[in-house]
Image (cartoon, rainbow, N blue to C red; front, side, top):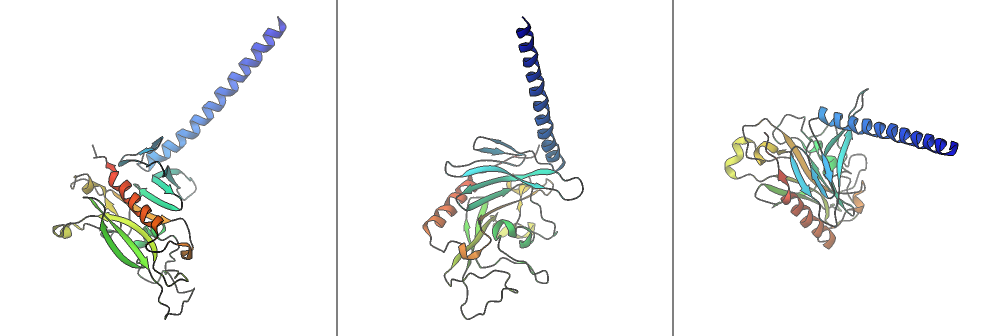
Length: 257
């Protein structure tokens, strides 16, 4: 009889501890959600499908998908969602739905998305920030274009590590220097400042009168060394570009209530 009472007491103690740990976990999760509320983005991941206030997207079978996060600065540091991050090997596709420009100019400045496109890029604070490489634009969908950058080092130019913002590779072959997606703008759209490094969510959802709400979509290679970048014509690179474009094309945009 005494053994049964001891057994019941141990069981009650275990249940109590489980309840405490559950409450602690709930509080931790709630803190993350509260921080997301503060930054106006609520992100959820269910299996291979991502959804937030602005978009939803599903990862193909050979791409991983996760919620991209960042941490605020200051004394009260908060973790907040930035959007979806998809990966295949060393290729990283970021659908940053909480990315907004701070420059105040139409389309933003490149240095505001440089880390998502050319992570090896070193900005010269005394120069006007601009992408490295020659630009090639192709149509990604009825809404978006894909902008690719290709870099070829001129062997006649002497490299200066201290002054080389583009981090020239050793090879003189043409290498891929990252891509980003911009709005596909007809000639008549010039007057409404269409295009640039940031996407206008309101225009993409057919709500031009809604408040400005920006995003940034970009594809890069997981390295800070441009000597590791794939060369133009590489079959794996071509496949990654096609698949990333198909993923972006499949994005569904949520209209504002």
